[in-house]
Amino acid sequence: MIPNSALLVCCALAAVFALGSVPAAAQDYPTTKPRRQFVTISLDWLNTEPLHFASHPLEDLVGREVAEAQGAAHDYETRDGEIRIDVREFRKRNRGVSLAIYPLGLSAGATLGIRGGIEDLPAIRLDFEGTDAPGAYALTGARAYDLGVGIYVADRSPGWGLGSQAFVVGGLGRIKADNGREGRRMFAEGGGGLNVGPLGVQLAVKFAWNTLDDPVEHRFLTIPITLRGTLSF
Image 1 (tube, rainbow, N blue to C red):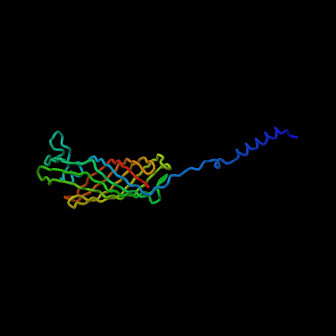
Image 2 (cartoon, one colour):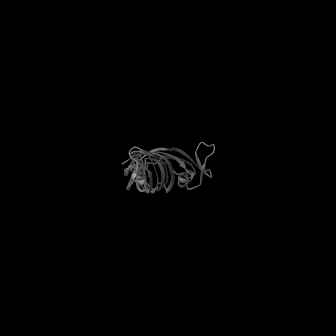
Image 3 (cartoon, rainbow, N blue to C red):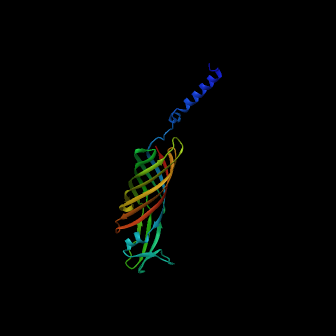
């Protein structure tokens, strides 16, 4: 007969081998997936620098080539020296709001996003002097109403864990300003940010090509750097 002590050792070894044969998946702890978000509301702070300002809108307004004035009291002048241009105002800091909708939900990975926004455009005031110079120019109270479609990629954590997000959006917009002036624009924007639960912060760069028809057809490029506070649900 097998001694009792040997029988106990055999039973213990059999139990160890039985536990070791359990599939690894059966030992995994269940993970909580982040809840999908479908809407993001944001408040935007924009800082816009003038870029290629001599070409657009100055050359469009005077109808001649324009260059920066070196060591002069005015800011720009036509290359023939006949017209001098003073930039009295270019307001860099502006505000905006936006609403993004994710029809398929945003959780982890890539998804489609539709985004609409309203943002202030820089106030621009120009004075012209010289032969055949146009009258003073003022763009005030201008706002852009944008609508775009893009791709959003997120790596969200469940609950109040730290997550991240990146996006690229392109679309069209309308411009409305004081004195009934209207225009149109095309834009592309890219950026990313961090979020904790429903709250987040984003940093974005937007390239917008703006066109107005009054007093003549002219264009200007705006590239605001935007800091955005978000609330998603």
